[in-house]
Length: 316
Image (cartoon, rainbow, N blue to C red; front, top):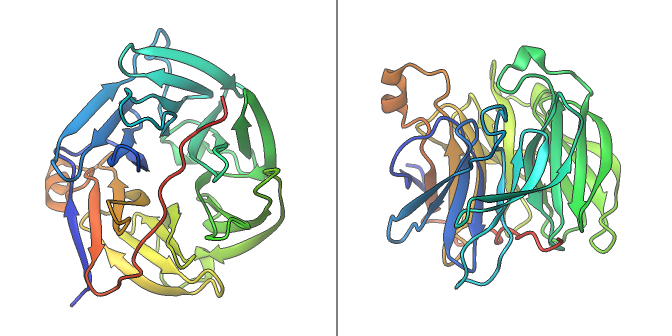
C-alpha cells in the first residue's frame, strides 16, 4: 500500500497546467493554463478558485503564458504577478488588467518555466521553435536567464529546452531540467551575486531505468532534506531523487499521464501540488485519467515530506 494520498484540488481540468506557486502570505496556490493565457488561484482549504484571463492588445498573437509568480507580499493587497507572454516578461495586475512589459528576447524564441531564487531574482529558460510542436525545437538554442531590477542577463547558453528549475536546501546548487536532452543539469550557485558555474549533468533519464519510452523529465522541486522531486511528463509519476547520489529513492504515481510541474505548499508545507495537461487527448481519456487537473499529494508515513515556500519576485 502506498503511503502517498493523491487527490485533485482543481474544480475543472485545464488544457496545459504549469508553474505551480505557493503564496505563503495568502495561503494560496497559483498556476497557469499556458495556451489559454490564464492564471488560476486556489484556496485549498475552502476550495475557492479565482481565474484571471490575461488580455492584451497582442493576446491573440501571443502563444502562451508559461509562468506567473506573485510580486506582492502584503496579504491584504490585491495580487500582482510577474508573467511570461511569449518572448516577453511582464508585470500583470488582475484587478485592473494592466500589463507592463519589462523585457523581451528575440522573435522566434519563447520563455519557458521560471522561478525566483531566495534573493527574489527571477530565473527563466527559453527555447527556439513552435510552442507545443516538439519537432520544430532547435537543439542548443535555449538559454537560462536571470531577471532583476529591469535587467535581463543571459546566465548560460547552449541548452535545448530549459524547463523546471530548483535550488538545493543550502542554496549552493541550482538544478535545471533540460527536457529535450532528458537531463538535470547542476550548477554551483552564489546566493549573493547570483552567479552560476561549474555545470555538470546531475541526472540523465537516458541511463535510468525509471524512465520508459517517451517519458521525459519536466518540472522539479526540492524537499527539506534537499532531495529532488522530478515530474515525469508522459509518465504519470514523480520521482524522488537523492541529492547526493542522483539515484531514484521513491516514486509517486498519479492518475494523469501528462504531469508537468510541482511545488510544496500548505500550512505546514507538507502538501505537494502537481499540475498536468490534457492537450491532445481524446475526451474519454481526459475524464478517465483526471488529466488537466491539479493534484495535492500528502504522505501520512513520512514527517519529512515537506518543502520550502516558493519565493516571490522582489527586484523591480
